[in-house]
Amino acid sequence: MTAPLTILEVKGLTKSYGAVRAVDSVDLHIDRGEILGLIGPNGSGKSTFFDCTTGLAEPDTGKVLLEGTEITNWPLNRIAREGRMLRSFQKTVVFKQLDVEENLVIAGQMFAFPSVASTFSFGRAARDRVAGLRRHARELIELTGLGHVAHMPAGNLSGGQQKLIQFASMLMPDPRLIMLDEPMAGINPKLIERVVDTIQYANREMGVSFLVIEHNIDVVTNLCSRAIVLDQGRKLCEGTPAEVIANKDVREAYLGG
Ligand code: ADP
Ligand code: MG
Image (cartoon, rainbow, N blue to C red; front, side, top):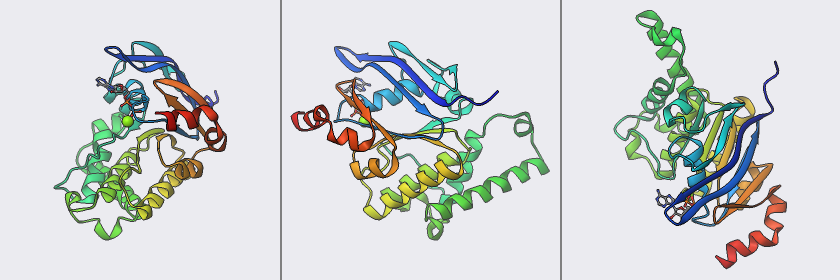
């Protein structure tokens, strides 16, 4: 059987908080190998959409299918481990006391996708496994340009560098889909380039698909072949980044608040 073309499919997703319809009947699909952009003004429901598709919040209605398997209401851990779908948060989370390399090795151990061999590995097999993780960690550290700080405590590094650590950690377990919530927010232009390069590398060389929430339209244009715009919980439009920027409703949503 050939692998399905669509990696993630979301149908009619709705989530209210009290009187606020944070996400309102949203349909969305991500093709295998795609980098899809998700944009929209503050409060338009982007993060809630992530929460409801990655198991952090339960949608009121709607379905989430990952490679054809319904994962609606699976808990976050199960989606990460069995679904190999990972997400980042707007707030960066790293182990501050551990150095960069340890952060990555631990991420690889925590999220290692289950197999009998890894669950029951001990002695030599366990040592080989850790050595493999360490090799993979070093590759990703070089790729993200963190080689010169690999043995410094993560907490001593800049916010942008911590974002890179978090991102590299997500690549450790070889995921198939990563959702990034404003990965470029608050980091300097040089590091933005690094993050863009790393996303492109992971996409091209590791076959990882992405859904990226991003406000920087140049980044969206650079990274994404397609973007979806949310406004007040609803899908306002979708198309190529150029089509989306030119859309009258999109301009109004941003300017008219
Ligand atoms: P965005 O990420 O696009 O800025 P959010 O998904 O964070 O938007 O928020 C969409 C709407 O849902 C906002 O009105 C926000 O206040 C509301 N909201 C989001 N999460 C919660 C929550 N946990 N409790 C109550 N209201 C929430
Ligand atoms: Mg948000």
